[in-house]
Image (cartoon, rainbow, N blue to C red; front, side):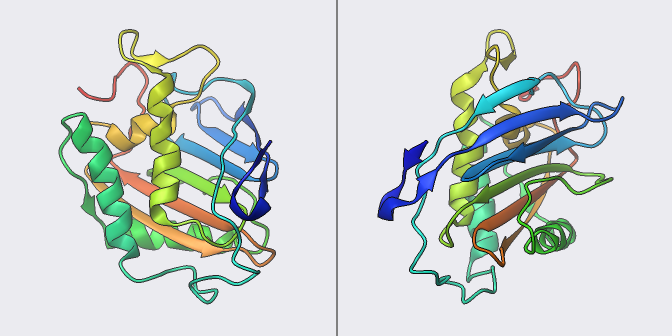
Length: 214
């Protein structure tokens, strides 16, 4: 549990479930901030089964009003998503991603579908890699989601090419995955409050037996 600016209390309990033989993972979350990643085809060992806690101090809700007026999107949002991803990739010598309107439409539709319940879950049957984010309050922006995902670099063991024991780092590895070339993202604001963000990646990362930067 953590108190964010303006007294927003953030508590998140994240648990991962193996849901089918193809080894896709989904993340469910309690109250606060949550993140989830999936590759619908075949994931590497960048996810751990079991309960975890994820604490974060996020932006406070602006007196019940959104800076987007409830639209969910804002000026230069696509650029913000792309720039934030490419800054992370540049730190590791990876080529920059390119924005895909096709992926953005997919991500936007999934985020919009979640605005009525704000349940942190992945889109079923997606052919893309996918990172999802949910936070309480109205002020979460593109950079906040990417910063949350990229923060998992601190629990990635570069020598062993895997997450540290009991940790989750697949959102970070998807961001820096060498073969991924395209990205598209969407943001929606939930009816009962909160922000849901989806980013889709093509080709997807986190393949079993492969490592992010090669």
